[in-house]
Image (tube, rainbow, N blue to C red; front, side, top):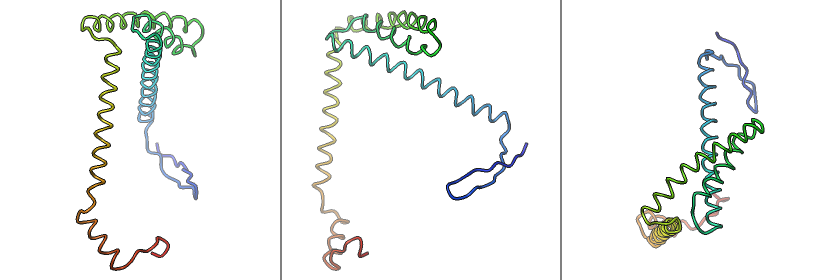
Length: 168
């Protein structure tokens, strides 16, 4: 079905033919809905990690308790827009799933003999090394000023003189 649709730009109105079928429009709507759902899942996951990290950093130790509290809070917040009953169910389900996940994570840490403080320290060391390497590379690149392009530029400037941008 062809229909003429007018699309407005800041300066004029442009008529064009909308040739999308209803099937295509439905598929685009599904894709947008799925991307929004995926974004909501990512928000929930990272908010849970943020809460558990804040609590464990404040307490200066890692246990299953942080994961359960984070799951309880994020599960409740994730379903809060559906009402009180859904928020309670979301909190309970989030706490239960976080209990399982926290138990697995803490048992892996216990079996390996590594603490979260060690992991955070190692990640901080890697970050510092990366920044130091980048700064050294930038300094090295700044020291190498006499390549062919720079020499050609210097020759042009000495021959023709410096000009301001307004004079060009």
